[in-house]
Length: 125
Image (tube, rainbow, N blue to C red):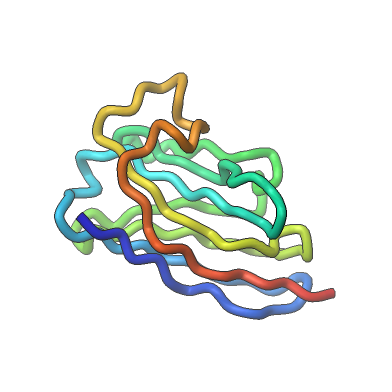
């Protein structure tokens, strides 16, 4: 199983980025898929998730109204559209997946079985 995240970059405050995560070895449509991020010196934190392909994403407060999670099951790919980026969004962003996770654990990084390698997002003011 491999998850490959991409799309990060160095941008300025207010800019947008779209992250992508493509899977091989698993079918995203059968999985809960999430985005997490980890800033330097901080714990990895939840960003967004779509539980069991319901297409009703849940977001951390930090991204509500600015981030949009979407799927393309035909391409086995998920996306995170990030608008109005802020310096506080600077982090390595990871995609993660699990076929067995329960609803109460979707924000818990320890509950995910598969992880991508991360893509760096740097937002300067």
